[in-house]
Length: 263
Image (cartoon, rainbow, N blue to C red; front, side):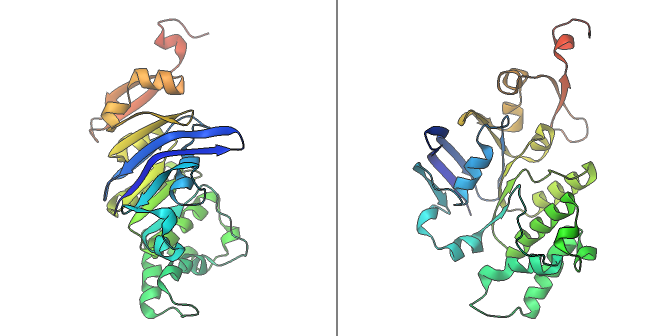
């Protein structure tokens, strides 16, 4: 299943946030969106999962206009893990993850044994089975993030949208979560803050700056010292990691990069 934004523009009042942005995620491809704060990453994702409506342009889910599909049809095929984890009522972890089964149920239909097993598997995969009976509000930020990923897994969608999925997670759980997502072999698009995470896990990377795509390609093609300086305003030394074979970035203070001495 594929996901594509074609020439998407979006404004808030009279301020243009996205300028004719096009992004294509092929089936079972892991695509990353990177860019400075305020570059439009989250806004683009919200347009792609129909929380916002494009001012112009089209979002296609499996080559069909997402605005012409029913909410239930979209929910069966597309799952979202957003930056925020708004929960109006204090559910248990198990109950919240079970909500991922809703698109697959008829009105008032109760969960069956298969549903319980799918939820249990999702809790196991995300390493939170031991939290099943805990109140969601009692969890740490990182634990809440894993609960929302587990709910997405229980949804069994083929397309996964992630907005800063590693926020609030320690290093171990960042890697565990990204390893898990990669092994699911889904169509994935993720807004990522950590460029080394993006380099390690993404097949393709799109770079946004002030609401425009300024570059896209493989991590090796995109993550260059000149681009990092131009887009992020930082100097970086980029090497190929001896273990992963992926680009690895080390950020360098400007005084060292220019051959000077630290103050």
